[in-house]
Amino acid sequence: MKKLLTIFTTAALLGSTMVMAAQQSSVVQADIDAFQNYFKKRFPNLSLNDFSKGPYAMSEDKKLQFDAIMEFPPFEDLRDKGEALWKKPFKNGKTYSSCFSGADKTIRTQFPRWNAKTGKVETLEGEILKCRVKNGERKIGSGKGKLAWISAYLTTIAKGQVINVIVPEGDEKALAAYNAGKKEFYAKRGQLNLSCANCHIDSPGQRIRGNTLSPALGQITHFPVWRGKWAKKKGDGFGTIQRRYGGCNKQVRAKPRKRQRDAYNNLEFFHTAMSNGLEISGTEYRE
Amino acid sequence: MTRKQHFYTFALSVAISTMVFALPSYAAKADVKALKKATKTCQKLHPSMVEGCAFSFSRRHGNCLGCHQVQGGVQPGNVGPPLIAMKARFPDKSALRLQIWDATIKNPNSMMPPFGRHKALSESQIDKITDFVHSL
Amino acid sequence: MKKVLFTTLVVFALSAQAEFMSKEHNWNNTPDQYKAAVKAAKAEQKLARSLGFEWRDIGKFLKTANKKYKAGDVKGALKWVEKAKTQAILGQRQAKDQANAGPRF
Image (cartoon, rainbow over all chains, first blue to last red; front, side):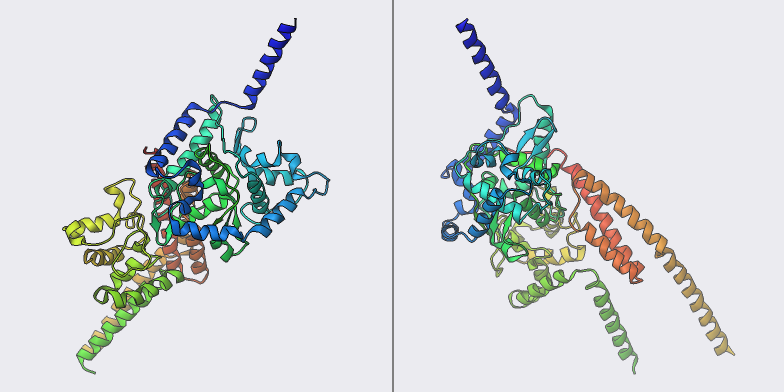
């Protein structure tokens, strides 16, 4: 009887963990391996986590500049504001945490994730926005400002957490979303006829005018970022990854997609999965 | 007025009206500004081919310096090869023009924008840029 | 007499030509023509967008066209509409060209 009980509970436990941690699609895993091997081969001196430093991993001079700025990050105040916002209860008494599961520092790497029920990709920023609506708070912008500050806070406390995006094996719809994101990444677009891959796979470390192109691997680990360029424009310098996608699209003279809709969410799904195994490096400065 | 004088006035007025109608109405303000800036640089650098040089250097036209080193060009990119010894690399000038018009014909994955096919530059701008680049 | 005949002839020829030209002018640049062109351009723009390959400035071109149209410059407006339409069609072609885009390693 005791034995039977043990077997039963073990089976139940095993079953539940299997539901919890869906297995990675083998197609996707093969993509990730090929993607990461390409970069390792091209930059044999860099460790996997070095790629998070983007252009700063490719030039000593730039790295020194970066280190100097990160000693007293220009965005500390805003990130602290993000923390305060995260912890401040809504009018109904609940907090943002109520919309998420697990410890706060694990939230960043839970996203983007596949929601089998809705058949859509969910992003961290998208869920923060939904959380506000669900709790009767007014809508806020989707690319910068408060949303980016909150997300920056969650990214900072997630430093060292490992990215692990899962496209569940056997889920056709999830794979279709992933493939849509993959195509968004590899297709040339805009009048200048450039794909994400043209710059960030074919030419990382090379320069467009004075700007060094970053490798696609590790781009996601430090978003939202605080950019000098954005600080000069309207706004405070912070922006989400999807704001950045929009900027890239504009530069190749393509019309940016709407943020937190399928096209960019799928792209974020693919783009983040390619950096599986890398650590979140916390919110960072970028040019 | 003599007949000759009449002819000059006529030619002048035609030239002015063409300039007035062809240039600013078509281009946005920022384009004009970028071109002006490039023209200034080019008057010093390549005085014999100011126009072709200006269309090549202007960030809102050819922006060759985005990816290529060009003699005298400040802060060039290095995604593409330096533009030197072009006559040796392109003995046939029309092959160079075609490369600028649509680089994806030779290499479908080329990063170089197909300036002609995508109408990022006009045909006459491409002619002038070709002349200039071929001279490098 | 000869002089008068000559002058009359010239005046007649000129006015005929002017009328012909103005007819041609109107034919190409009526408000109806403009509205039809905008409709066609917007349809192409919509198609490009649905494919995910709309270019950045198409909307701006149509706005510029509208400004010109409102200022009475129908011919100038049509030029911008045409530009918008051309770019929308080029975007659709790009979508076709890039249908099988993917990694090369």
